[in-house]
Length: 156
Image (cartoon, rainbow, N blue to C red; front, top):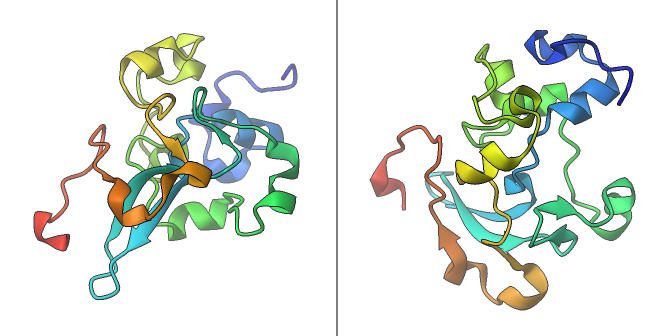
């Protein structure tokens, strides 16, 4: 990570190189959780069920480089997708920067460690179950609550 520009996270997303793009991720793990979509309203409900590759203790992918080989529908977040994906949490660095907002104060690029993120309760580490052990997703609906915009309670 020696080639990262100083305060690169303040640049528009389209100006980031691939190394800076990857470094922007806070590592919360919420992208790797299964979601359910209401067929009628299109509302997205989150679960505490993680992709089989997510280490549930650390919220890190156990084989990030080769993940698409094991999970073909794993989504590679791109600049275009940041604008299209509706389920990125409000705390997500990609979403925040795409909307012109600064990184949250707990982000490791600002604090130098992931401890502040963990203290803020943003990471899913230790709070999720692997899809290999979960059973029906409907039994695992959660409201993470941190940093989210208010949504209509009648959606679900």
